[in-house]
Image (cartoon, rainbow, N blue to C red):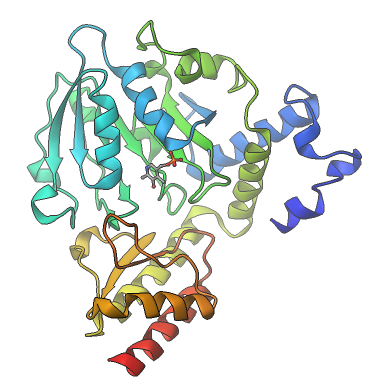
Length: 345
Ligand SMILES: *Cc1c(COP(=O)(O)O)cnc(C)c1O
């Protein structure tokens, strides 16, 4: 953000901002291509995958996925139901065809990832969709479902854990992510799609959602969100500078482990998620006495610890410790939580 600020009014000595240049100008196309290349390097994306920079966030892809992948005759998709975001994706897909549930954790209030052995995969499905990290519930899958070996493309909404660790992209048909958690400004979505999946779309699909159209136009069939794309590029550069995704994984593992260890060791706070499914990105926790929630939020805010209120659908607290959160911030949170527990425990 400091770099973006410094060059906001005078980008590359051109006397104008990057957001003022044409998306078709050679200097902007260079920014766009470099961002894609850096993302490819970070995730080691194989050459038979296209990388798209699109608009409408992850939610636009909730509709784009069925429209690109469901057959017109007997449309059938499978979804794993793991919580809030999976539910949104399922509701959207049901508008376009039949959806069956390959696995669900609804029986225990979405506090775990459905076990791999319990999944009921259907080889007739057009694709299998899942949400590797449930942002609001704080549930992260400890495995990658294997529908691909049945010939069923695997689609993942990685909005809240993409780039948090290395990933074997070749195990997926499609990966998509809204940018605002680990990539850049909201509104942008990144879609990584295997080339054989570009030509299955229904004829009535809007151009703007058609992955083939976007792939052929280098994501510039219409004017792309140029400033968001540029900022995403700065984030990719930063990730490379700090050691890539191996370094990020190590940092994220340390951050999450110490926060969970503190919560587990306390009788004042608790986290309801099964240990093997706990998210490294989103750590929900509740206070033993929820009448103290308001005071906790007020005092943590006064201490400079922001955005700790849990999502309204689950309540309690949630610490989102994305890539951009340094380890010192987690230390500060733990220290605050400990002081608060001593005062009120
Ligand atoms: C935030 C989030 C979304 C929604 O993203 P939008 O960009 O607001 O559409 C979808 N899925 C997951 C997993 C998310 O974390």
